[in-house]
Figure: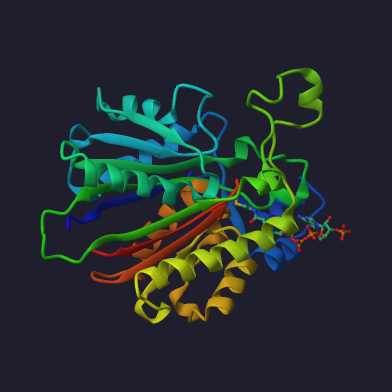
Length: 331
Ligand code: ACO
């Protein structure tokens, strides 16, 4: 059977660092509270002039270079984001223009922090079912700072900006076992109101009253999200391992969505994952939503946590609620 491999990967974060000490000047919080409850020490934040598509473009350029292909070789662009540059057109089209790859299909998906895993599943299916497609560019990119309520201490400490991108391609080496082995995704719309950004859509009209009610910022029931996240991430990891006749012992590196150190700690304990297998970079990235997993894979690779032939397991949850896991045998 044909395999889809990650041919290239890259990530990009803005230069500006927002530390917990900086946040102490903005809201009633302390470095001790943020580190103790989340593990986050700092996050990268865009300048007003930097956009989601700018971050995605930079990450995409690095992924194309790593894959040794040019933007002309890309057959499809999928962008996972909850912070598109505009309501429309899709941020994928804006990045397409920046990359100068004309006439190919481009679209965005919104599955919040699970968006990257959803997007690689879609890309994999395109590649396996459409022989005309050779390379799909999947980008997770977010300017979370644009929808964070900087007056809400319970949420503004959590998020950061950034982007990660991969080039997915059909492997020409039929004997190789490398590639995306399986992807499992799911959602429960019953939990939609637990974590949302109610404004910007058709449900809440744009008017002064709704601006005053801060409807255009993230709203979150933190404790409920926390419990759901642990439940769903543990279940999807168990399911994907079971249906592939694997155990956690077969996995070399686990890349979880980087939301909260206590959530990562809980799934590490419940699933019996040895801590060194768990890759964590949220200390200096915060929660970058759909960008979290591709940034973490790229940084884990650069730091030597992932090597050729390794089995990598990624797992995410996000608003929706959505969740997903992917098993990747590294090329
Ligand atoms: N600094 C100081 N105190 C704070 C802060 C802060 N930044 N934020 C909240 N508090 C206070 C609260 O007001 C509360 O005070 P009270 O007891 O006097 O009422 C107290 O701390 C405890 O608040 P909780 O919300 O119960 O704190 P909790 O231990 O649950 O931690 C947190 C909050 C970190 C948000 C946690 O619930 C969490 O991580 N939830 C999951 C969030 C998450 O991962 N979201 C991303 C989802 S992914 C996506 O799709 C975007």
